[in-house]
Length: 81
Image 1: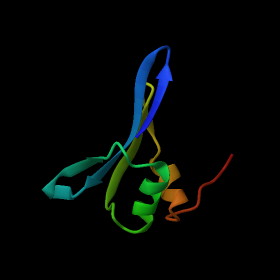
Image 2: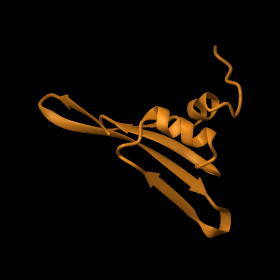
Image 3: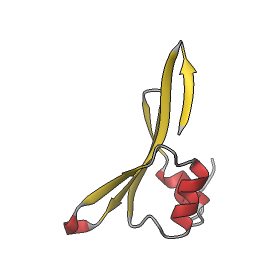
């Protein structure tokens, strides 16, 4: 878990990995101690699948990092503009 101070308040950041099992439903995995590298490694090792989305929650913002993480794990190439 990453903790930062912003204007005197504590803010937490964490990743949410949502797996989609079709008719069986979805599961959101939230481990406050998981790092970016840890999430990418778990994707690469097949621990997370099938991935619906990956969100990075920080400073009151929800950022979709699915494509970045899948590319970093070697699932497909990204096109930089």
